[in-house]
Every structure is written in structure tokens, then in C-alpha cells.
Image (cartoon, rainbow, N blue to C red):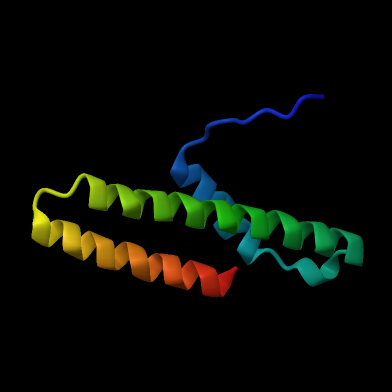
Length: 86
């Protein structure tokens, strides 16, 4: 089957991540634990990508130079943190 992308509300996306983080995974077999880790990692990485894109949009759509500078600093901090996490 051809892979398809879907669109879901960001609030649902974050609820799914929070739910998965809350689950007690050690009760599952090692295969399920590995699957769980892969799925959660992919979702967290996607969330971080979305947040970085939004932070970058803050630079592009800033009202003035001061707001643009502040948005750029926030973006660069998020980008630095993202490199350390993944």
C-alpha cells in the first residue's frame, strides 16, 4: 500500500504523545517495547520539527526588528536544544 500523510489537530497530536509517555511500557515484550520507543521517538521528533517551523515563522512574520531579533534568538535556542536531544 502506498504511504499517505494525514492531517490531525495539533492538540490531538500532543495528547497522543502525552498518552504514550504516560503508558507503563515495561509490562510489554521487548519487541513491543522497541516498537513503542520507535513510535514515540518519531512522534516527538515530528513535534519538535513543527515547533521549530513555528519558531522560524515568528522570525519571518515579526512586526519589527526588535520582535524579529527576539524570535531569532528563540529559534536558535530551540534549534540548539533539538540537536542535543536527537
